[in-house]
Image (cartoon, rainbow, N blue to C red; front, side, top):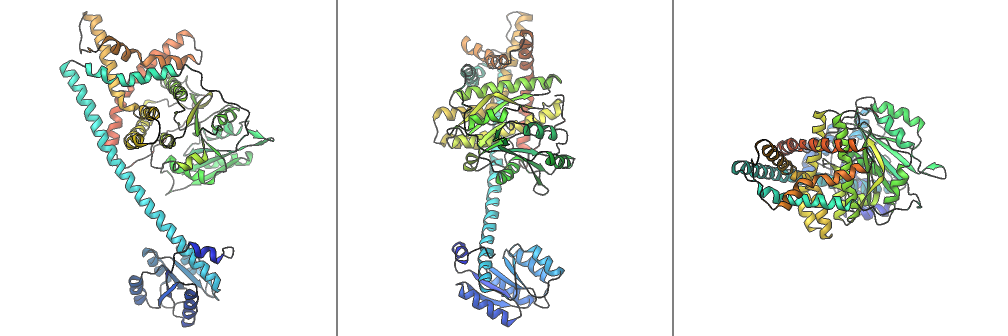
Length: 586
């Protein structure tokens, strides 16, 4: 307390607050009254019995209570808890008695204590600090309640919009089947068709080059970890082997946030700490742990020293030059963030793992196109690097968001920021190898997209950014909205093709839009994925097999749409469910 200047504290304290004293010591009360009034605070009275204390507290509603711990015939612990219920801060004045009861009281109240004989300036500083601290705490509680109310309102919006979208899509499909005419579908699908073709064409251009001759900023790397004993050591060692140094010393720190792990993750991290000096460990425990990845990242942000923040999942492997190359992109003063390419290190484990590898190649190709179309890429959960100030300026990560990465990217772009894609380096992660956890993961991703689409759509329209940038954001966050109709259209095409082949000149469901519209709807799926796969220079047979397999794989988006809509309409809260990492074949 002695380091705080009285005048500085006075400037932030509430003017003329009311101070109430609980004591039976008349001399002490008189002294406190003098000090309080000399400081231009209001002494509103005192009390020394259980009945008068309660009645006066209710009547006067003081801003601060000074509690004499030597008052007799009062249950001090109960009294302190009652003051807490009344939301009134208190400073305990301790005399010669300093036993377990006093110790318990000091554990209850967060506003400090003073020891008799009381120093005048010390009391005045303590009062000002306690009142200001209480004001800030109250403000935080109000903000938290408002935030929860806001999120509950958003949840209602999401439920109503999900219901509307589901009913609309199902109704259109039923009408198409009963009328045996889906011409309308061809025209509707012309929207995502054109978007896919534009992205494919734009991805052909080589992205703008970056220079690697730059002054290396300090980087903080975050790794959220919850029950990651199978992969956390591999991840930490891989990242800490990165060759990003200045004068031979690492120009980065690695902050692992152990978020309530119940396995051996904590023990593994403790052992690693002895070998890796740039490793920092943050441990979150219940009840604050397990609430969402955004909250975890915001905790790490508070403790970080870097100008640039990198985020990796706990199943990550990177090459030694990864950080040096990707930071070159975001070191550009005009760029706010960058997303790396993502590959699967267990891509050959089974069909599902291989298709996720192909899927992320396709997603990377889309981000390459957006990079060429105006630096309107998006952040993924793994391998994203963002300027720390950009994160702060847009309100940090949303702890309530199911996909906090997409949410952050949209907020950055609505503020006029730019996000690039770095295809030069890749982050390797573990593909999910079983359908049940895979669909659970994808439902979460789809919910995150719909959350962002439903909540941010009005904000996107009102944002002071270019029309093309608005279209790019809307096209990206509305991706899942068209999936059911897109693949229903593909099913109709396949059924009609089979019927024509078997029964000749038979059309099960008519699609009578102009030929160009129809052919574009059919072929638009393929150019982007063909370009994405070609960049890894595969053999011709492997290339064809991957395209066919991926086309079949994408039909999982039909049941995924219904699963997502059901989850959104029935959930009672936004809940983040992490993907389990098993440390598959590397």
